[in-house]
Image (cartoon, rainbow, N blue to C red):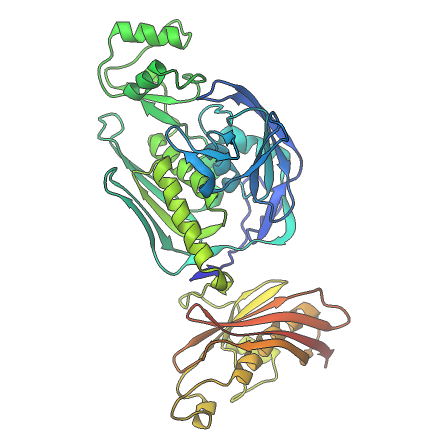
Length: 481
């Protein structure tokens, strides 16, 4: 099951207004950055451009005939050996993970990334330069809902050969934990965590990519890091290095001198965080999982992650979502959390009473939707006469429960005063699954159009156990008492 969930709005550190995570966002204006690709060595100009709702994240090669566009999609990844590479119809974009992580971390959903070369600039090897230009452009809320998807089961990816394990655990918001162990006396065993995505800017974005000296030597020997420099990667030295090798590295990188302790970091570079390597691995996870194409609320636990395993994991999550499209809109219900409105509030708003009050509490509400809860027990009055030997909740009462839930939303939107709601019409009503004693009903009503002259049009859906039981389109009128 996949569920659309809502989260309280938070205010970012540098935001002058509240950021609504339930809305889609794009950039307020175009913004550009230029730099060298770490592997190709090509100087690239990159422009981030605002895009319409539901556009997603897409890359464009303006240096190629026809200026082709490629979607940020895990199914289009063709290489993960030295970063994450997208390819379609002969068009390639290398090293996409750092800019993708920055966009996710800053809450940008829709953007066109225009490049005049084959690779995203490496800059300093982190996401921080991209975060800075996103802040410069500004993030703009769009008039489109953003659906967050949660899971009702763990999704696991395991690679026994590489000793890699990634798991997505059902949760109410997106968080990531990474653990790394390279059997290195310099790095040791490290872990990093991102509890809230709005902490990405300060806690994760500044963390730079890293490699080991023996990997660097191999890459140099094979001319594979043409844009590599000490300014865009941390080089871990976990074995003694002689003067001859240091001289060779100094010549390759155009430096007068290279220094290193017996075990440490090349040129004695200072880390931005004690666990910067683990934090950068977390950054890569965020960037690679952006390729799922759906915003997911889950706790991601990544043990020894890498681009290859991240992308395979992203494919599993995407497959799960696509397989369960029929339940994408299922609300997420945590009975341990306090409701938005309790039964006392509902009785103050609605004229219904026992035995005809069919909403127990409200767990979500906005200016466009509401979710109520009805716990069905064997003691319900209607089971005495409705299939007593095979108790099934009448479909018309499920519709009535939806109507009462929608009535609370309509009355709240009506403003000050006392109101009642009277339903005028029901269209496209379908009963898909039976409701029996012991079921918990989630009653979702969504506004289909702005309220005009007191007329309210809503789509109603009853969910139970991740399945749709009943759905209908309803029209009601708000009448002042």
